[in-house]
Image 1 (cartoon, rainbow, N blue to C red):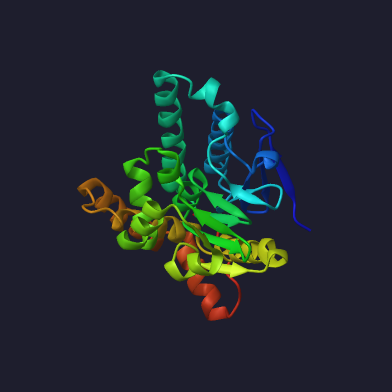
Image 2: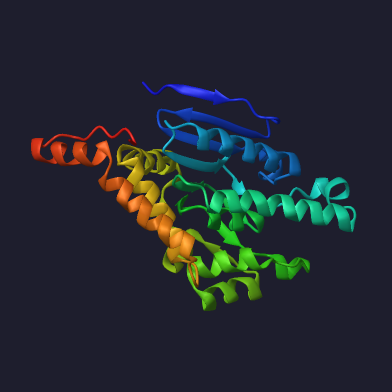
Length: 271
């Protein structure tokens, strides 16, 4: 039986818990298709901070409650209070940029579990994760061009990294919706399953990751992030080398070799 440990956050519009070695962040605003307010972004950061400090957490899943949407973007009902002036808009944009960057550069693997609409800011959020597993009813769109909204550099770059410049431009310029099979063909999502199989499939993949060597997975995560940069800096490249060396110097490296020779599953500790 899985042990569930709840994480207390500043709002119940975001839920967080840990099952075994897997952290869960759930956007819990289903009556608004999980549109996200400023207080919700604060709570997401709280959850991620807790997961980053917990050595037992090896992978994080982000999902939306209600079965209709992953995240549909910003909560328009909060615009007067959160985006009612230039200063408020600047504060909101700076705040969500920080959270997006935390997710994109999170030291542990992240998975977006998408069931339903993944629109606007939700698409950007999903692009921050390492990969995306979705139900066959899911739909994706970047409607900024229909709303006269600006779309920032980081968000455009994430979409280009995920599906390439031509397809990203097509999606952004037309503001059209695409279905799950199209998102799979474009490479934005990595697996499409029936809705009733979504959670079990995501958990299957997460558990596979959680059972692997944490230092190796962390090194691969960091190195792959550096590899996506146009020009990695020297400090970043040195850290890549140091993380690889730490894998070979670890107890887990010894355990991995012994388990292979003894034809058993390894018990990795991250040390």
